[in-house]
Amino acid sequence: MKAREFAELAGVTVRTLHHYDRLGLLRPGRNGSGYRVYRERDLERLEQIVALKFLGLPLRRIKALLSRDAGDLPWALRAQRAALEEKRRLLDRAIAAIRDAEDAPTPALLKKIIEAIEMQENTNWTDKYYSPEARAKIAARAGEWTPEKQVEWSKMWSDLFADVEAAMAEGADPKGERVQALAARWRKLGEAFTGGDPEVAAGLRKLYADEANWPASMQDQMRPFMKKEVWEFMARVMCG
Image (cartoon, rainbow, N blue to C red; front, side):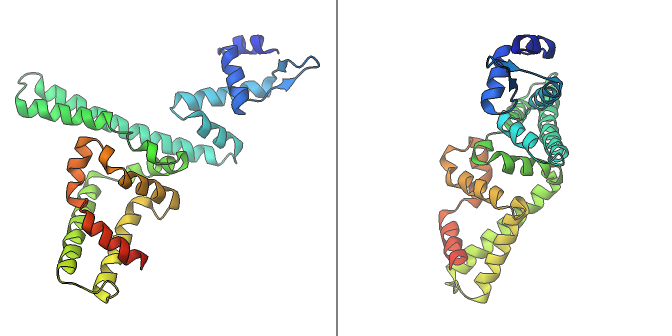
């Protein structure tokens, strides 16, 4: 089939087909006159592209998935499901806050609505710091990051910061056993989020380097953990 006939059959535009061809997503054959010619196998691939795009995967990610081993696709779908479930959780939280305030919209309840909606809107603000592969890995592990685990993680970081500040105030030797034990705890907590993956770790470093552009809610949440002198001290310890 030529492009127009194939587009009508598939329910897309010819312009879309041309775009997918330029991206290398869907490469048709060519006839003797140089026109694009599509076959049955192209329809199957197009259906895969449309389905994955509908689920929210970017075209570059779709191209990478369809170019790799078929085993990558179920993994990517699980990652996307985890990301969508997290969005649904935040949306449900915003809806519940609005429902609670419908009969008696007190200032406290209205503040709760604003916080819930801000969390929903800010869900993807960190995406720009991570590669598509790193985002997929983070999404795949999102279900493991429960509210209880977040509370536990925050307390461990708070305790670690307090211990580092105490060591700094007492002039502890950066190469000594005490400070090196703190460095080991620091690495372990970092790996709790990154999973030891270098791509995720690279994105996390970019995120922390751009603190000035974080949403206000994130800046407030992270303020206890963003003491410049502590980070600089631990950077010297870890590099030394």
